[in-house]
Image (cartoon, rainbow, N blue to C red; front, side):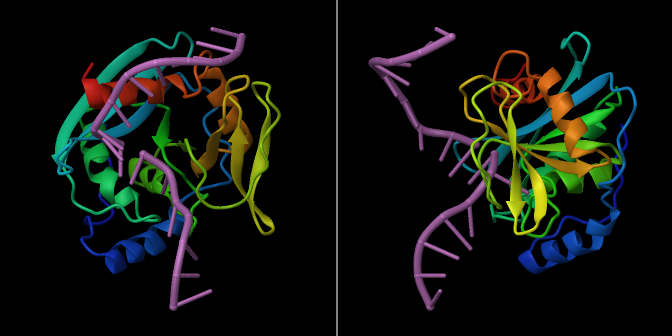
Length: 222
DNA sequence: GCGACAG
DNA sequence: ATCTTGTCGC
């Protein structure tokens, strides 16, 4: 699939911040998303022990069966340090390369990290959604910004992630008695519908199937 | 000013 | 993210 080139990859923190400010208005948080979602892609990046090389992976699954229909891997190098709030500039360059190798076009992208629940309301999921021009959901494994209360122990239970008077996402329990995942909107997807999709994509483990496959693919290959 | 801080 | 063993629970 094709990915829009809306900017060069910045090398400094001020440049990266400027890119976020410029792209933020392009993220759509009101669109309900596609009526039918058949193919969902999970994206993840694994780092080599040397801290310089990395592997970006994309796994596309058919929602109805959760079978993997396509896998793509790309090896690259770290181009940006890990800075909370600028995480996208570390992983997106290689993830975009991987997406461009994809033969199929997913209906929805699941990102490892936050979307709008971000210090400047433009996390990796929003960023990738704008560049790929596709609906995206941010799925994080640990809390970042905002406050939340632990949801009830049953699968499907959730509680809002809030920052003062705004709701930034949800702590969603995808498995009974297992700590929740942190969901936030990326692009062209409602928070409510996002959680709906995520529960469908998480029949057995804590992490949604597309992201589990991408994780394994990025570090073990296949 | 200090600490915290997606992966 | 990555470096790492055993162990509790469904």
